[in-house]
Each structure stands twice: as C-alpha cells, then as structure tokens.
Image (cartoon, helix red, strand yellow):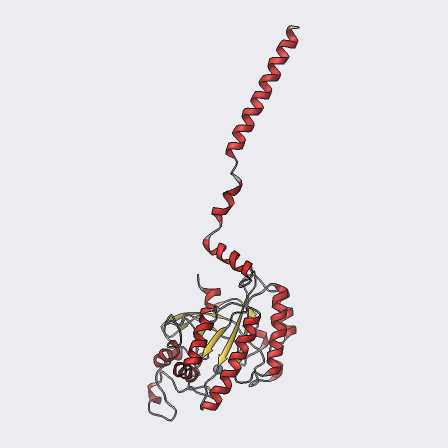
Length: 300
Ligand SMILES: [Zn+2]
C-alpha cells in the first residue's frame, strides 16, 4: 500500500516536472510571426514586385544588355535609329528585361530638342532602364566630334571636350547623373566620374560573352567594367557575334563571380536580329534570368 502511495507521488512529480519543462521550453521558442521582421525592406519590395510580376525573385546569374545608340550625322539617320531603339525597348519591356542604353551625344541632342523623345527617355529611366554615355574618340572610324585632345580643337568635325559630351548626354536624364559609359578604350578620353563601363576584346567577339568584373584606371577615374559580346552587330564579321547557342551554353557553366554581357547596336539592328533577341529573351525567362542595369549589378 505504502509503495503504491509513493509511486503515486513520484508519478505526479514526474508529470509536474515535464509540464513545467514544456512550459519553459515553449516560452523560449520564437513565436511564429517572428520571421517577418527579419525580412529587410529591400527584400520585401522585391517580394511584392515579384507578386506584381514586375520583377522576378532573387537570381544567381547577372546579365546585361547594352544598346549602343551610335553617333549620327544627319536627321534622317537619327530618326531611323530612333525607331530602332524604340523597337528594342518595346521588346525588352514585353519580357521585363532591363537595358543599359548608351547614348551618343548627337542622339542625346536630338532627344533634348524633341519633347516626345525626351518624355519617352524619362519613362524608360523611370521604369528601370539605364541611361549611359557612349563616346567614339578620334581613333574611331566614326568620331563623334568630342575629344580631350587639344590639338584637334578647330579641326573639321570638332564639337567639344569629353566634359561637354557628358553635359549633353546627362541633360536627357531625370536625376542628372550618368555613372556608366562605353565606346572608348583611351584612358584620356574616358569621361571623368563615370565609374562603371562595359568593355570587350578587340575585335569584339562572342568569346567575351562571360567574365568577372575588372577594374581599370581611366584618366582620373577608377572604373569597374563588365564584359560584353556583340549580338547582331553588322559592322563585324557575322561569325564573331554571340548566338543563341553561345548564350545557352554559357548559362550552363557560368561561375558565381561571372556576368553575361551582350551589346547591340542600333545601327545594324533589324527585324531579323530583333527576332533573334526575342529568342534569347525566351531562354532567359525559362532560366529565370532578368537582365539588369550595370549600375544595379555593380553598385555596392
Ligand atoms: Zn559605338
């Protein structure tokens, strides 16, 4: 009898200890809703936008599409090119791909003087495309007329300094700032304060499709470059252009520190190359890749 009484007390004590232990353990457990505050504002925006379909979720592959808006020498040329640029942006918007739009000064001047074009450019910038500067220095077959080489002042075609070029291109932006550039490899011709750029090999080649960012001092400016390969560029041999197959293959074995970069030029873009670009966009969608601006990829 006494033993049964003792066992009873022990049983009650065991149950009480277990109960108290469970209570203490529960108190130490984070409540369910605690996960929410750990989501940063930026992550939250990405999540919300993903729901809206404006932005895809976090991705591991960084990809850039540069569009070179080349220097033009007459109005007909300018309007022609402008049509091409618009069709590239329209297609990209359809697939929610962001572009890095590299403006030559002559086309930037056209944009500034044309209210409709300026409104369009501001819309593009607002929707997440990047406005960059494109400079053909005097060593280029199609010099844009701007240079830091004082010996060329007053010569045929001279328009001004590289600083003046930057003023013209910057005028088309809403935020009055351009951080991305391309076109020249001459450190003396690189626009001061432009800290990001895209650059490929010479001659341009599909071999430069993928690579890690690289730094170079250009004049007074330390510049971080992303690689680029030509796509549908008519001024070079067709076999040097990157193709759908090159891109598909590159995506298979890209390293974490590498980026994929393509460069189109408005000068030779046509129905055919636009269809090729759409194929690439379809591949990107399947792979969960959204192209981004150079600034977005490189800014800390
Ligand atoms: Zn160019």
